[in-house]
Image (tube, rainbow, N blue to C red; front, side, top):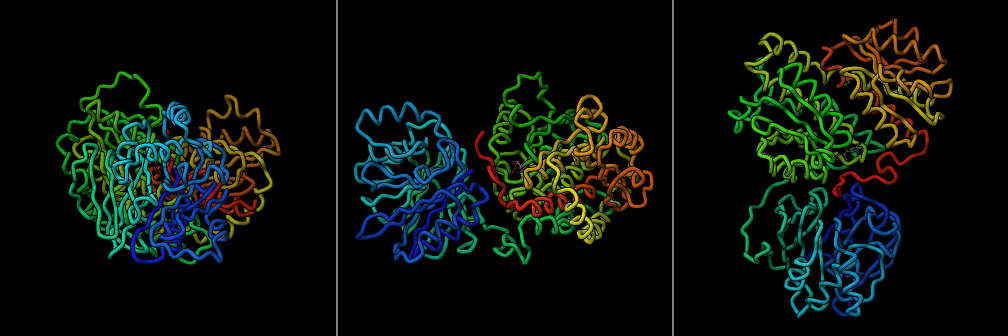
Length: 608
Ligand code: M6R
């Protein structure tokens, strides 16, 4: 949560940090602000409650020739989303300015001490204590003051700081919140993620926990907590700026749904060969994998739904007992885990989700083999796991995850087939499944052509205020994901349930104003789900179904059907989820919602 960016170089900094902030808005967008260093006039600060566009409008006509700036877009944790709580925050004399992503856990005690020492606070945030601490420790060199202040903090942070009393310098530090340094030609950017620096450079250094970086126009110096200088490698970002932009679509969400076919092709590329799965990312740990007797999958949100499918894949295909844990629960449970021969799969699009990271670190502490299924290359989960697979879905900017889900499911399926070698799965079975998987991108292409029908269905649906999403077995995680997508982007209350569980309580809600979206492909549980739908029909509940093309049984009881091509039943989630994503998108549009940036959300949830 929260996006931070800083620039130091020869160009005018304001347009650069504003452009970068827009790319980071997915991380939070309830307020925004910047500080520009100005040689003669002292630091210039502008802050607004609201989005980056509002900040930009506020700056129209301002002359800001400064070439050093820090900026921030916020997702509020401590203090309301207002101008007074927007970052950057300044010290008592407005000479030092700081932007922060994370949470300072001991802020209340620090604040009390600082107030007793005469500091005046002007916001309700936890962040403001940091800038006053830096002020308190300042003896003429900004990096020394920041280093001293950091020693007193507990919590998580990525910070960028500048001072009018030590100009031409930005100091930044990281502890459990993402931060990277973009290295351009005679200029440097600091940012929460790579999309914010891509317009200027593709060369970055990932700043690690406990590290601090001091940047001037002449160069940068990275140090650890003991002030020892570290030598770090420059890494090339594998995305183009165009890949991170909308490419002619009205919204990122629609663009990303439409990328589904390529995303599935990308995650398979070079990994599916001659009826076999080759996963270079797991080869380094293949000996340990041969002895794995148990798998734990951990994730949050959409990634958690992908993990639920992963559980089925590992059990059904590889015959390995598997279970899924919310990452936020895993860390605090004292479950008797047999950690030897247990592999933990951490699934995260961003690779920065705080809950997932905490679970991963706990699993490592317990001695488990840790494997990441991650989209963002170089992210913290990717760096901290023993081995893993990248999804290669490209940048996902829409806050509601769509294409990343498809790629996660395919990556998990490939991992399950990989592990099934010499276990429960025969060669022929693997070959048949992989052949069917290769046909999935074209099947998604044909589904995307049905968008007009889905849009028409969305219009019929948009006036409801509640919805139940039902599915069984392979379709149960899809129902959960369909409901999550709908509530995120349309604010329509939606719940995902197992279709059988529905009659154990939720059926009480059913009447003619409470629609059901049923995921009912022609699979081994189709008849059972159909019986559950009859129970809804008998109570006059409207039914919209996702069913296999030509399924007359479903169309005879449903009020509306979206058909998906026939496929191997294990692969049906890859097809069923696409119309649900489009349905949510069009219902969100019909209800006038900002589908790319739903209220109260952030793309990357970096607080626990
Ligand atoms: O980056 P991650 O996959 O770890 O993110 C996990 C969830 O925060 C994320 O999937 C969230 O639920 C999305 N808004 C879903 O659309």
